[in-house]
Image (cartoon, rainbow, N blue to C red; front, side, top):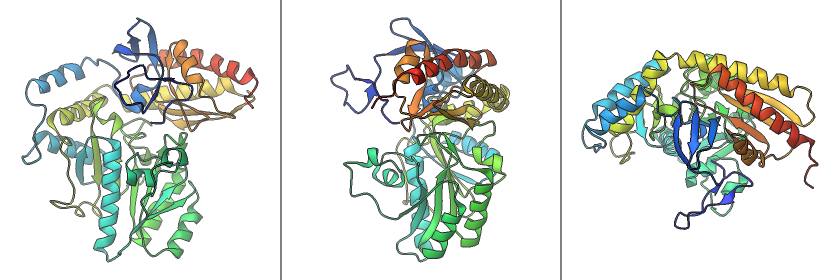
Length: 405
């Protein structure tokens, strides 16, 4: 997550000052609504940055987690964890892939994907394997994932970065084909199906299909980062399913545990056997509490029809925003799919973070100019209409102001 612009310095003197924060402390939530410690109420259009799949205090999730806490929270991976197999089987069922490694965060999932790609290359006799990555990408803040990311602001001060990445523009298949002709060390293509922190930039379906074909021709791994756009957010289980393809490696996290930290790397036949005992591991990954959260999240999503809800309510929200903002000078585009939407403005709009909060709406601004909406997948049509009612006047007023020099 990028620190929000125009945010105040944290008032907590003993917490390391790594975030710019608004002066708001949340106390509790219910559904798509949260309350702060002063009793103010907010409509949650951010969902913990695409994390709170089931909203807050879901009546089916809470008792399941209470039950698991009373049984077993953590177990070392020295021993079998039956809930890992339960969740892994479900993820393989909905993805069509065949094996899963569990961790705790999206960064860890992406780091594991990079290790899989490198070892895949070494196993093929490539001494210095390279990975195609993208302009506008965000994969995390470890040194390796930071190197795969394309944001000079967050890379500054942390060099030297990790080598082995070749960067190309999104949705330009010719650029990747040129890399294939020029670079025999490439072993994988790694991209977000929909870029999140980069500004809600979707990969075109025909582009994904072209990548799948090229990776098959070159025997590369196609690695699709679905950390933010996966798990039903676009109206299908995974955003790449709109293109009718399957990746070889798929990192997941964020919404998988509805707020309990869960990360996963799901792999297909080309990648499933790359890592063996001793090649990779984690202390907290796959713990019983996280696994129960994932199992229950997927179960409730099916029971409550949340993929359909994300598609239909997301379409209502997108069309409503487009209708209210159509023709407004300074609005570049409303884009995205399902309940992962971005409104790009013609100039930086970080001030809208605080203004929206004052008006009772939580959202984020990413890539300086893009308002990001990633609410819980339980969002109702009425709540989508409320987002439109609150947000669009704020955008109009902002764009009516003189631009800062």
